[in-house]
Length: 383
Image 1 (cartoon, rainbow, N blue to C red):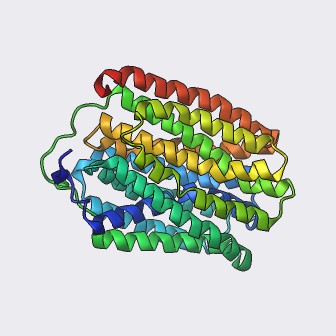
Image 2 (cartoon, helix red, strand yellow):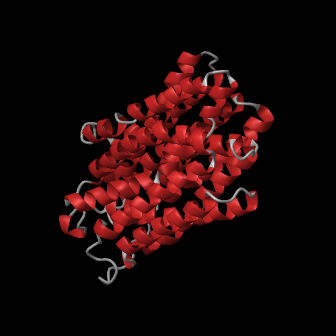
């Protein structure tokens, strides 16, 4: 890929992309605190708490589906800045309301705005000279952000109350909006270069997208309830918070590791293992009664998603160098993730936590099938 395709190889542009990735992917680190706060501080049952987060993610999915085909025709810096700005406003209002219907509408607005910003962020990363490496750096930045978020936010919620969570979200989105306004890299051919939309996306791209969605579904379904599982098994709040902080430090490993292994392992083979490893971790959380296996499995759950998604991102960059598929990454991740909280909440409410493990195993089978089909149709082009 030509470095002239995008001006994001400079330090300011990279920093803007990393911060935008962290803000746009806040759900990946915030889900247990988010769901836990809605249940314990706002009094919602698991199903309604899951529904609110699902509405945020559905808003992000629909927004990403709208912006991804238009990636080459919009001013990406402007979309990112306004997206995070609107999300900040929605989260700010959320900190002052407690009615379910009002919160539902604001979650949709926040999700749609975040999805727009994240869509152009991932598309811009995909147009860089080394998309796999840059996305790995973004994963590392998200891990550092996760340590700070999970280390500070539960304490703030405990001390101040539920609105503290949404005030933290507001601050994160304001920081991202300001950074994007100052340094977000503008594509060389956006918005008026006359470049067409390019050829249709291949079947392999769609299969990889479905595989990523399956992993996103399992991640969101399980991660939403790890805090509740620990609490309901009698583990102390301090112990659970310690696990979440440890999780943040563990998340420092997978992205750099995936970046280092970029040219040593074939991405189309690595992604096949993702759903299997993820299901094994989920089953451990669901069926173990002791603290040690619960803590170990919970600590590595997001790391599995970060590691294998980095390879899937690199694979998509090979399959679609124009960046359109990667600008739809929020839709891929969040289409599955949007179903996760409400599906998980419904399963927990009616069948208990063990049902999450059974569902994860079934979804993993579908995910492996999708990645295998992508390999079958893309192998000649990538060999």
